[in-house]
Image (cartoon, rainbow, N blue to C red; front, side, top):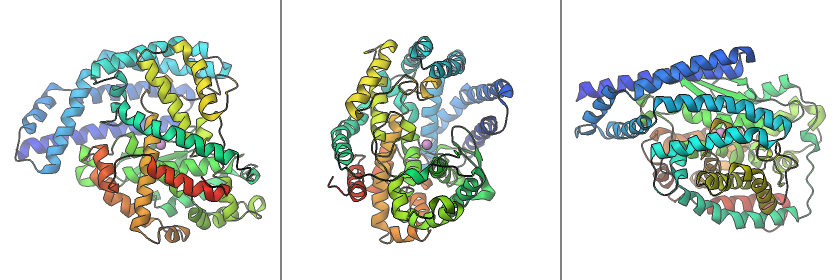
Length: 500
Ligand code: CO
């Protein structure tokens, strides 16, 4: 038994090493190389990905897993490792190599079509490619297998066990309540000054501030770095090597700050996974619901709180004194929390944000279930924005073409953002119960209590529990929007001086 187990661990660590190589190539592609070199880098990444897939789906590896699966003498965590790897193995075996290659060619071509369509503000340019992507995504769902709707197979790709019943339960509860709150906020009449957030902010100074902020939050700069890329992301190359990217905008002081905090939330999770299970599921992070709960907890619940800015605003002000000398932490806090229905998701506040997700989710489900066709998207998109947020995109670039994800073939991904926020609010409440001086600690620049709580309740478990078990275990409750709604009501009735 021992020999086979160590064979398994060794093999998994090799696979993890290849993943690290792919991640490093991909990180470097986004951060360092010129566009003329990108196609060659993509080829290198594709080659390594193919090698990874071949190794992972190798029949001999399957035999090894199978023999360990029936081994009753395995320690509990290793038994769980084998169980999860067996599931992953079977799933990977269901998708043929030719399918992966065709899909990857289609989506890399789709990126250019999407980009062109967005530039020309014309959905029609992207429509034929998107149609083909959707066909292939449906085919993939069939290959993977599903219960109920094919969309469930896609959701499972991002968080094992997630399904449309769960999404509908959350979103249907959220919709009327959020709508009411947004209406009350908009009609409260309170005008919040946000002018000082825009202007000319030196990128060098912004960098300095962002790095010092990440350090203070607990990011270990010896074991990672923060660089620049157009679309911020985080990657954990291996142990003690965590890469964050952020994106600076000289006209907007908040853009980099919140993307840095968001990515920090991802990075601190990845870099605190149990080292003793490196390469195996118990040493890996959960799916996107849990990962986004971590980033959004830091970004919104913590990073957009008053105590956070009681500590950080004086520091930020010292970097940009001319611009911010007359602003108080409270005024800054209000400015970064303005609620305003808009057409663009990435600029949305934490209240209206969920409608951006719900709209895309509803359209995605209808597309995958064949209830609407690709040509219906712009009309349906615009009418849902009108219905839920009372705004209408001026053109397709501002509407259904705004995000890159469909060109990647990512269907079933967006709901994880909202569900992650729901869980983040539950964790936030639980931490406040656990540490009565939670806010005070933050206002003094202490964050280690947050990291300790998350280490004990989230990081240490790797993928041992299912996402719903992990939620229950860490908060004592099932995933629900009620804690999030309570959080929103408390926070925004104070900011807008209105009863919510
Ligand atoms: Co994220």
